[in-house]
Length: 217
Image (cartoon, rainbow, N blue to C red; front, top):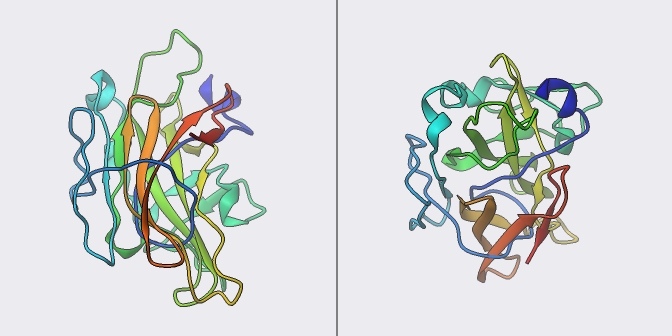
């Protein structure tokens, strides 16, 4: 079942605004509703929040991923947050640690699309999610990542696949790269990011192996 095959695997993501990251093309639609559109289109977010967009597929009605209560979600295999436990438990958008891991910070929204390979191969297609996560305290050293999330076969668990990491923050920790917007296009992720110097850049990533790891291209 996918639960077993997902162990040690990570996923891909899409969204914007928060901490640091390394990205390479343009990205998406992050309406508060988290709705997705055909192929995903870029929206114009405010300076302080991100936008996200994803493609919706035939699994949208049955995947159950859209019913996720993201601020209070339990996500397995999310090693980005630095926890030793198998699962990261969010409460009101944070894991509550001294150096917190926050999900969908600054009003970010999830992107929904079918972009993670199903296991086994003959399993019905289901929608996946791409969510923004930030590690670190505001106004301090912090880093953002786009996290691909997939449901287990029975729809009860949520697993993270390999993440798309933002850039490191500045040496003093006072400057961080943030995702302004992101989207899923086919099986690729595109995003607009704000660099440490305040400039914006379009970036894009694609999966380079069967484990769901990403490369910028």
